[in-house]
Image (cartoon, rainbow over all chains, first blue to last red; front, side, top):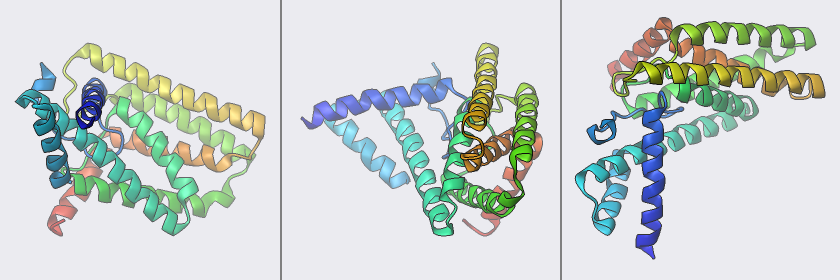
Length: 40
Length: 209
């Protein structure tokens, strides 16, 4: 069950990461350095 | 925040047996989400304590919506970003609360029109304003983000115009506070905005925050 929840969260987190890369910057919080793996 | 991100990432890595690339993606996304939630919570708590939450929240949301497309200056650390967010939005909220009696139907229409024109000019000239940690690599992406930013401003103006026509001055605070949010976001796109953030950042470093 935990693995299933984490799997769904992983999809959400991946979406958030790629959405941020496609957009200009973070909305209001800190903008961390984009990891190499997302720039490929 | 770093500890929380690391702890949560390790749960994903151990449970789902992630490789290094996916681990980086998880860490990055968690940093984004946790820093956004923290910034909003801090801004909301201080605004609530100051009795200006009804002004500050729409202002921060309008600012955020435009910011994700238009970019703008950032603090060098997450703590600096949180402090700047709390200070700036609550100061602007307090200013808006003070000058609220000066607004009437005419000044509301005129000021929102002026903000709309100013925002269009600034966004056309400076957006998207990227930072070294998050460069915008291609010209096509820059064009796309500039167009989306312009649409955000047009939609904002259409919404507040409709609100003013349909409801009169009933949602005046919403109109004013979102306008100030847009205005502040436009300032952070300019060279002066980057300089201002840099000065605050250096001040925070000087006081060892």
